[in-house]
Amino acid sequence: MAKLEFDGVTKRYPDGTEAVRDLDLDVRDGEFLILVGPSGCGKSTALRMVAGLEDISDGTMRIGDRVVNDLSPKQRDIAMVFQSYALYPHMSVADNMGFALKLAKVPKDEIRRRVREAADILGLTEYLERKPKALSGGQRQRVAMGRAIVREPAAFLMDEPLSNLDAKLRVQMRAEIAQLQSRLGVTTLYVTHDQIEAMTMGDRVAVLKRGVLQQVAPPQELYDNPVNLFVAGFIGSPAMNIAQGSLERDDGRIVVRLGPVSLEVPDAAMDRYPTARGAIGRTVAVGMRPEHFFRPDGAVPEHQRFRARVSLVEALGSEILVHFDVDAAPVVSQDMREAVDNDDAIAALESSARRGTQQFTARFDPGTPPRPGEDIDIAFRGEYLNFFDLESGHALR
Image 1 (cartoon, rainbow, N blue to C red):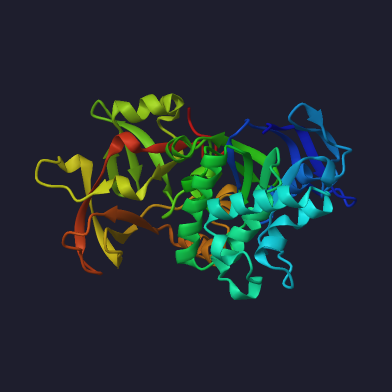
Image 2: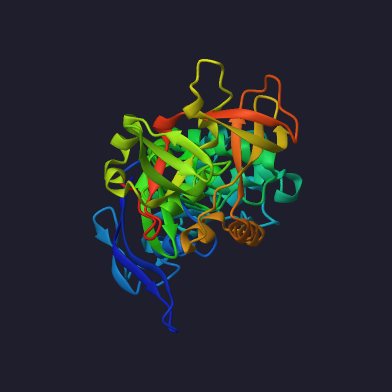
Protein backbone atom coordinates (compact mmCIF):
# COMPACT_ATOMS: atom_id res chain seq x y z
CA MET A 1 0.00 0.00 0.00
CA ALA A 2 1.06 3.58 -0.52
CA LYS A 3 -0.29 7.09 -0.34
CA LEU A 4 -0.88 9.18 -3.46
CA GLU A 5 0.20 12.81 -3.40
CA PHE A 6 -0.63 15.54 -5.88
CA ASP A 7 1.65 18.52 -5.19
CA GLY A 8 0.70 21.51 -7.32
CA VAL A 9 -0.13 19.21 -10.24
CA THR A 10 -1.27 20.91 -13.46
CA LYS A 11 -2.22 19.48 -16.84
CA ARG A 12 -1.93 22.00 -19.66
CA TYR A 13 -2.62 21.11 -23.28
CA PRO A 14 -0.76 22.68 -26.25
CA ASP A 15 -3.63 25.12 -26.91
CA GLY A 16 -3.25 26.47 -23.36
CA THR A 17 -6.30 24.72 -21.90
CA GLU A 18 -5.74 23.69 -18.27
CA ALA A 19 -7.66 20.50 -17.54
CA VAL A 20 -6.27 20.35 -13.99
CA ARG A 21 -4.87 23.39 -12.22
CA ASP A 22 -2.47 23.44 -9.27
CA LEU A 23 -3.99 20.37 -7.61
CA ASP A 24 -2.88 19.69 -4.02
CA LEU A 25 -4.44 16.47 -2.77
CA ASP A 26 -3.28 13.55 -0.62
CA VAL A 27 -4.89 10.11 -0.74
CA ARG A 28 -3.84 8.53 2.52
CA ASP A 29 -2.36 5.05 2.83
CA GLY A 30 -5.30 2.62 2.69
CA GLU A 31 -7.88 5.35 2.09
CA PHE A 32 -10.81 5.17 -0.33
CA LEU A 33 -11.03 8.66 -1.84
CA ILE A 34 -13.68 9.66 -4.38
CA LEU A 35 -12.92 12.33 -6.98
CA VAL A 36 -16.20 13.80 -8.19
CA GLY A 37 -17.41 16.63 -10.36
CA PRO A 38 -19.44 17.43 -13.47
CA SER A 39 -18.47 16.28 -16.95
CA GLY A 40 -15.25 17.89 -18.16
CA CYS A 41 -14.07 19.02 -14.71
CA GLY A 42 -10.70 17.23 -15.00
CA LYS A 43 -11.28 14.27 -12.69
CA SER A 44 -10.39 11.56 -15.23
CA THR A 45 -7.38 13.59 -16.36
CA ALA A 46 -6.15 13.68 -12.75
CA LEU A 47 -6.55 9.90 -12.49
CA ARG A 48 -4.71 9.36 -15.77
CA MET A 49 -1.81 11.47 -14.52
CA VAL A 50 -1.48 9.13 -11.53
CA ALA A 51 -1.51 6.15 -13.90
CA GLY A 52 1.06 7.69 -16.24
CA LEU A 53 -1.39 7.84 -19.15
CA GLU A 54 -1.21 11.66 -19.22
CA ASP A 55 1.94 13.74 -18.88
CA ILE A 56 2.14 16.22 -15.99
CA SER A 57 2.74 19.81 -17.12
CA ASP A 58 3.70 21.22 -13.70
CA GLY A 59 3.94 19.96 -10.13
CA THR A 60 4.93 16.66 -8.59
CA MET A 61 3.11 13.34 -8.40
CA ARG A 62 4.20 10.86 -5.72
CA ILE A 63 3.14 7.26 -5.14
CA GLY A 64 4.45 6.29 -1.74
CA ASP A 65 7.81 8.00 -1.38
CA ARG A 66 8.61 7.93 -5.11
CA VAL A 67 8.25 10.82 -7.50
CA VAL A 68 6.65 9.20 -10.54
CA ASN A 69 6.40 12.09 -13.02
CA ASP A 70 8.83 10.45 -15.42
CA LEU A 71 8.02 6.78 -14.73
CA SER A 72 6.13 4.65 -17.25
CA PRO A 73 2.73 3.21 -16.24
CA LYS A 74 4.14 -0.28 -15.61
CA GLN A 75 6.77 1.17 -13.24
CA ARG A 76 4.21 2.82 -10.98
CA ASP A 77 2.82 -0.27 -9.20
CA ILE A 78 -0.82 0.66 -9.69
CA ALA A 79 -3.80 -1.23 -11.10
CA MET A 80 -6.59 0.47 -13.01
CA VAL A 81 -10.25 -0.52 -13.40
CA PHE A 82 -11.93 1.02 -16.43
CA GLN A 83 -15.51 1.88 -17.33
CA SER A 84 -15.41 -0.53 -20.29
CA TYR A 85 -14.07 -3.57 -18.33
CA ALA A 86 -11.49 -4.09 -21.16
CA LEU A 87 -11.66 -7.90 -20.96
CA TYR A 88 -10.19 -10.14 -23.67
CA PRO A 89 -13.22 -11.91 -25.22
CA HIS A 90 -11.27 -15.02 -26.32
CA MET A 91 -9.83 -15.67 -22.85
CA SER A 92 -11.46 -17.37 -19.89
CA VAL A 93 -12.15 -15.48 -16.67
CA ALA A 94 -9.08 -17.07 -15.07
CA ASP A 95 -6.84 -16.13 -18.00
CA ASN A 96 -8.18 -12.56 -18.05
CA MET A 97 -7.49 -12.18 -14.34
CA GLY A 98 -3.99 -13.64 -14.54
CA PHE A 99 -2.86 -12.14 -17.86
CA ALA A 100 -0.87 -9.23 -16.39
CA LEU A 101 0.93 -11.66 -14.07
CA LYS A 102 1.75 -13.90 -17.03
CA LEU A 103 3.28 -10.93 -18.88
CA ALA A 104 5.31 -10.17 -15.75
CA LYS A 105 6.59 -13.79 -15.85
CA VAL A 106 5.14 -14.66 -12.44
CA PRO A 107 5.38 -18.46 -11.88
CA LYS A 108 2.28 -20.39 -12.97
CA ASP A 109 1.60 -21.79 -9.49
CA GLU A 110 1.66 -18.28 -8.04
CA ILE A 111 -0.69 -17.01 -10.76
CA ARG A 112 -3.16 -19.81 -10.04
CA ARG A 113 -3.00 -19.11 -6.31
CA ARG A 114 -3.64 -15.37 -6.71
CA VAL A 115 -6.43 -15.89 -9.25
CA ARG A 116 -8.22 -18.41 -7.04
CA GLU A 117 -7.91 -16.16 -3.96
CA ALA A 118 -9.31 -13.19 -5.89
CA ALA A 119 -12.08 -15.32 -7.37
CA ASP A 120 -13.04 -16.50 -3.90
CA ILE A 121 -13.20 -12.90 -2.63
CA LEU A 122 -15.33 -11.82 -5.60
CA GLY A 123 -17.62 -14.84 -5.83
CA LEU A 124 -16.22 -15.85 -9.23
CA THR A 125 -14.86 -19.32 -8.48
CA GLU A 126 -17.57 -21.16 -10.46
CA TYR A 127 -17.06 -18.85 -13.47
CA LEU A 128 -13.29 -19.17 -13.88
CA GLU A 129 -13.52 -21.24 -17.07
CA ARG A 130 -16.22 -19.12 -18.71
CA LYS A 131 -15.64 -16.51 -21.40
CA PRO A 132 -16.72 -12.88 -20.80
CA LYS A 133 -19.66 -13.17 -23.22
CA ALA A 134 -21.24 -15.74 -20.87
CA LEU A 135 -21.18 -13.30 -17.93
CA SER A 136 -23.54 -10.56 -16.78
CA GLY A 137 -22.41 -6.94 -16.62
CA GLY A 138 -21.86 -7.17 -12.88
CA GLN A 139 -19.81 -10.38 -13.23
CA ARG A 140 -17.65 -8.76 -15.92
CA GLN A 141 -17.01 -5.84 -13.59
CA ARG A 142 -15.95 -8.30 -10.88
CA VAL A 143 -13.51 -9.90 -13.32
CA ALA A 144 -12.03 -6.45 -14.03
CA MET A 145 -11.72 -5.96 -10.27
CA GLY A 146 -10.12 -9.38 -9.93
CA ARG A 147 -7.55 -8.53 -12.59
CA ALA A 148 -6.55 -5.54 -10.45
CA ILE A 149 -6.53 -7.47 -7.18
CA VAL A 150 -4.22 -10.27 -8.33
CA ARG A 151 -1.50 -7.75 -9.11
CA GLU A 152 -1.36 -6.79 -5.41
CA PRO A 153 -0.63 -3.16 -6.34
CA ALA A 154 0.24 -0.21 -4.15
CA ALA A 155 -2.97 1.52 -5.25
CA PHE A 156 -6.18 0.98 -7.20
CA LEU A 157 -7.37 3.58 -9.71
CA MET A 158 -11.02 3.31 -10.80
CA ASP A 159 -12.42 5.40 -13.64
CA GLU A 160 -16.25 5.42 -13.51
CA PRO A 161 -16.35 1.60 -13.28
CA LEU A 162 -20.12 1.37 -12.75
CA SER A 163 -21.39 3.72 -15.45
CA ASN A 164 -22.22 0.87 -17.87
CA LEU A 165 -24.43 -0.98 -15.38
CA ASP A 166 -28.18 -0.58 -14.90
CA ALA A 167 -29.45 1.32 -11.86
CA LYS A 168 -30.21 -1.70 -9.64
CA LEU A 169 -26.87 -3.35 -10.36
CA ARG A 170 -25.02 -0.08 -9.71
CA VAL A 171 -26.45 0.02 -6.20
CA GLN A 172 -25.33 -3.57 -5.57
CA MET A 173 -21.86 -3.02 -7.01
CA ARG A 174 -21.38 0.20 -5.02
CA ALA A 175 -21.75 -1.77 -1.83
CA GLU A 176 -19.54 -4.61 -3.07
CA ILE A 177 -16.69 -2.33 -4.13
CA ALA A 178 -16.81 -0.40 -0.83
CA GLN A 179 -16.75 -3.65 1.16
CA LEU A 180 -13.95 -5.05 -0.98
CA GLN A 181 -11.78 -1.96 -0.56
CA SER A 182 -12.33 -2.04 3.19
CA ARG A 183 -11.38 -5.72 3.33
CA LEU A 184 -8.23 -5.32 1.21
CA GLY A 185 -7.19 -1.96 2.67
CA VAL A 186 -5.61 -0.86 -0.61
CA THR A 187 -5.27 2.86 -1.31
CA THR A 188 -7.98 3.65 -3.85
CA LEU A 189 -8.72 6.71 -5.99
CA TYR A 190 -12.18 6.41 -7.55
CA VAL A 191 -13.49 8.81 -10.19
CA THR A 192 -17.20 9.38 -10.79
CA HIS A 193 -19.59 12.10 -11.95
CA ASP A 194 -22.36 10.48 -9.86
CA GLN A 195 -22.53 12.28 -6.53
CA ILE A 196 -24.65 9.46 -5.02
CA GLU A 197 -21.70 7.09 -5.60
CA ALA A 198 -19.43 9.72 -4.07
CA MET A 199 -21.56 10.07 -0.95
CA THR A 200 -22.08 6.36 -0.31
CA MET A 201 -18.67 4.83 -1.01
CA GLY A 202 -15.67 6.88 0.04
CA ASP A 203 -13.84 7.74 3.26
CA ARG A 204 -13.46 11.25 1.84
CA VAL A 205 -14.76 13.03 -1.23
CA ALA A 206 -12.85 15.59 -3.30
CA VAL A 207 -14.95 17.90 -5.50
CA LEU A 208 -13.47 19.38 -8.69
CA LYS A 209 -14.80 22.25 -10.80
CA ARG A 210 -13.05 23.24 -14.04
CA GLY A 211 -9.86 21.52 -12.90
CA VAL A 212 -9.73 23.27 -9.53
CA LEU A 213 -10.22 21.48 -6.21
CA GLN A 214 -13.19 22.99 -4.36
CA GLN A 215 -13.44 20.94 -1.18
CA VAL A 216 -12.23 17.64 0.24
CA ALA A 217 -13.96 16.19 3.30
CA PRO A 218 -15.79 13.13 4.63
CA PRO A 219 -19.13 12.72 2.82
CA GLN A 220 -21.35 13.94 5.65
CA GLU A 221 -19.22 17.00 6.33
CA LEU A 222 -19.27 17.83 2.64
CA TYR A 223 -23.07 17.52 2.63
CA ASP A 224 -23.65 19.48 5.84
CA ASN A 225 -21.01 22.19 5.40
CA PRO A 226 -20.37 22.98 1.72
CA VAL A 227 -17.72 25.66 1.30
CA ASN A 228 -19.39 27.36 -1.65
CA LEU A 229 -22.47 27.45 -3.86
CA PHE A 230 -21.02 25.03 -6.39
CA VAL A 231 -20.50 22.26 -3.81
CA ALA A 232 -23.87 23.03 -2.20
CA GLY A 233 -25.68 22.78 -5.52
CA PHE A 234 -23.79 19.75 -6.82
CA ILE A 235 -23.84 17.50 -3.75
CA GLY A 236 -27.24 16.13 -2.77
CA SER A 237 -30.11 14.25 -4.41
CA PRO A 238 -32.55 15.92 -4.55
CA ALA A 239 -30.39 19.01 -4.75
CA MET A 240 -30.30 21.75 -2.14
CA ASN A 241 -32.95 24.42 -2.72
CA ILE A 242 -31.13 27.72 -3.28
CA ALA A 243 -32.73 31.16 -3.61
CA GLN A 244 -31.94 34.82 -3.18
CA GLY A 245 -33.00 36.12 0.21
CA SER A 246 -32.37 39.13 2.41
CA LEU A 247 -31.17 38.93 5.99
CA GLU A 248 -32.95 41.47 8.20
CA ARG A 249 -33.70 42.35 11.79
CA ASP A 250 -37.36 42.23 12.76
CA ASP A 251 -38.55 43.00 16.29
CA GLY A 252 -35.30 41.81 17.88
CA ARG A 253 -35.09 38.67 15.73
CA ILE A 254 -32.96 37.93 12.68
CA VAL A 255 -35.10 36.78 9.78
CA VAL A 256 -34.47 35.78 6.19
CA ARG A 257 -36.98 37.00 3.62
CA LEU A 258 -37.55 34.86 0.54
CA GLY A 259 -39.98 36.94 -1.48
CA PRO A 260 -43.13 37.23 0.66
CA VAL A 261 -41.97 34.46 3.03
CA SER A 262 -40.17 35.46 6.21
CA LEU A 263 -38.46 32.84 8.38
CA GLU A 264 -36.74 33.30 11.72
CA VAL A 265 -33.02 32.51 11.72
CA PRO A 266 -32.09 30.86 15.03
CA ASP A 267 -28.77 31.43 16.79
CA ALA A 268 -27.64 27.91 15.81
CA ALA A 269 -27.72 28.87 12.12
CA MET A 270 -25.86 32.12 12.73
CA ASP A 271 -23.26 30.23 14.75
CA ARG A 272 -22.66 27.93 11.77
CA TYR A 273 -22.32 30.95 9.48
CA PRO A 274 -20.84 33.63 11.75
CA THR A 275 -19.97 36.12 8.99
CA ALA A 276 -23.65 36.12 8.00
CA ARG A 277 -24.15 38.59 10.87
CA GLY A 278 -22.19 41.10 8.82
CA ALA A 279 -24.54 40.49 5.88
CA ILE A 280 -27.68 41.66 7.68
CA GLY A 281 -29.37 44.17 5.39
CA ARG A 282 -27.96 42.49 2.27
CA THR A 283 -29.21 39.96 -0.24
CA VAL A 284 -27.51 36.57 0.09
CA ALA A 285 -27.90 33.07 -1.33
CA VAL A 286 -29.97 30.90 1.02
CA GLY A 287 -29.70 27.11 0.90
CA MET A 288 -32.32 24.70 2.28
CA ARG A 289 -32.01 20.90 2.11
CA PRO A 290 -35.25 19.04 1.18
CA GLU A 291 -35.21 16.84 4.30
CA HIS A 292 -35.27 19.82 6.68
CA PHE A 293 -38.78 20.92 5.66
CA PHE A 294 -41.69 19.51 7.68
CA ARG A 295 -45.48 19.74 7.93
CA PRO A 296 -46.08 21.88 11.04
CA ASP A 297 -48.67 21.28 13.72
CA GLY A 298 -50.41 23.91 15.83
CA ALA A 299 -47.42 24.26 18.15
CA VAL A 300 -45.28 25.89 15.45
CA PRO A 301 -45.64 29.72 15.59
CA GLU A 302 -46.91 31.62 12.55
CA HIS A 303 -43.54 33.31 11.98
CA GLN A 304 -41.88 29.91 11.52
CA ARG A 305 -44.27 28.58 8.85
CA PHE A 306 -45.57 29.61 5.45
CA ARG A 307 -48.21 28.64 2.90
CA ALA A 308 -47.21 27.10 -0.42
CA ARG A 309 -49.01 25.66 -3.41
CA VAL A 310 -48.07 22.08 -4.32
CA SER A 311 -47.17 21.60 -7.99
CA LEU A 312 -46.07 17.93 -8.00
CA VAL A 313 -45.92 14.97 -5.61
CA GLU A 314 -43.55 12.05 -6.17
CA ALA A 315 -44.40 8.98 -4.08
CA LEU A 316 -41.27 6.87 -3.55
CA GLY A 317 -42.65 4.35 -1.05
CA SER A 318 -40.51 5.15 1.99
CA GLU A 319 -40.84 8.90 1.40
CA ILE A 320 -42.53 11.49 -0.77
CA LEU A 321 -41.00 14.42 -2.60
CA VAL A 322 -43.27 17.45 -2.65
CA HIS A 323 -42.50 20.19 -5.17
CA PHE A 324 -43.99 23.57 -4.35
CA ASP A 325 -43.86 27.11 -5.76
CA VAL A 326 -41.84 29.84 -4.06
CA ASP A 327 -41.92 33.52 -5.08
CA ALA A 328 -38.17 33.92 -4.59
CA ALA A 329 -35.62 34.44 -7.34
CA PRO A 330 -33.13 31.62 -7.96
CA VAL A 331 -29.40 32.19 -7.96
CA VAL A 332 -28.22 32.12 -11.57
CA SER A 333 -24.42 32.26 -11.41
CA GLN A 334 -21.72 30.35 -13.25
CA ASP A 335 -21.33 28.19 -10.14
CA MET A 336 -25.00 27.22 -10.20
CA ARG A 337 -24.99 26.55 -13.94
CA GLU A 338 -22.05 24.18 -13.52
CA ALA A 339 -23.52 22.55 -10.43
CA VAL A 340 -26.70 21.43 -12.20
CA ASP A 341 -24.55 20.00 -15.02
CA ASN A 342 -27.50 19.60 -17.40
CA ASP A 343 -28.64 21.77 -20.31
CA ASP A 344 -32.35 21.30 -19.57
CA ALA A 345 -31.82 22.15 -15.89
CA ILE A 346 -29.84 25.28 -16.82
CA ALA A 347 -32.66 26.38 -19.17
CA ALA A 348 -35.20 25.84 -16.37
CA LEU A 349 -33.02 27.83 -13.95
CA GLU A 350 -32.81 30.76 -16.36
CA SER A 351 -36.56 30.62 -17.04
CA SER A 352 -37.23 30.75 -13.28
CA ALA A 353 -34.95 33.76 -12.98
CA ARG A 354 -36.94 35.63 -15.62
CA ARG A 355 -40.16 34.93 -13.72
CA GLY A 356 -38.65 35.66 -10.31
CA THR A 357 -40.11 32.41 -8.95
CA GLN A 358 -38.98 28.81 -8.68
CA GLN A 359 -39.90 25.39 -7.38
CA PHE A 360 -38.56 24.02 -4.12
CA THR A 361 -38.46 20.33 -3.20
CA ALA A 362 -39.29 18.98 0.26
CA ARG A 363 -38.81 15.42 1.47
CA PHE A 364 -41.57 14.17 3.79
CA ASP A 365 -42.56 10.88 5.38
CA PRO A 366 -45.27 9.21 3.26
CA GLY A 367 -48.24 9.75 5.63
CA THR A 368 -51.08 11.44 3.78
CA PRO A 369 -49.55 13.15 0.75
CA PRO A 370 -50.92 16.49 -0.41
CA ARG A 371 -52.45 16.83 -3.86
CA PRO A 372 -51.09 18.95 -6.73
CA GLY A 373 -52.76 22.36 -6.64
CA GLU A 374 -53.36 22.18 -2.88
CA ASP A 375 -52.15 24.96 -0.55
CA ILE A 376 -50.35 23.55 2.48
CA ASP A 377 -48.48 24.81 5.55
CA ILE A 378 -44.75 24.15 5.47
CA ALA A 379 -42.05 24.86 8.05
CA PHE A 380 -38.27 24.59 7.96
CA ARG A 381 -35.81 23.64 10.68
CA GLY A 382 -34.05 26.98 10.79
CA GLU A 383 -30.85 25.69 12.40
CA TYR A 384 -30.09 24.01 9.07
CA LEU A 385 -30.24 27.19 6.97
CA ASN A 386 -27.17 27.76 4.77
CA PHE A 387 -25.90 31.19 3.69
CA PHE A 388 -23.55 32.11 0.84
CA ASP A 389 -22.21 35.35 -0.57
CA LEU A 390 -24.19 36.13 -3.69
CA GLU A 391 -21.20 37.41 -5.69
CA SER A 392 -18.30 35.16 -4.69
CA GLY A 393 -20.41 32.09 -3.89
CA HIS A 394 -18.38 31.46 -0.73
CA ALA A 395 -20.10 30.18 2.41
CA LEU A 396 -20.53 32.99 4.95
CA ARG A 397 -18.30 31.36 7.53
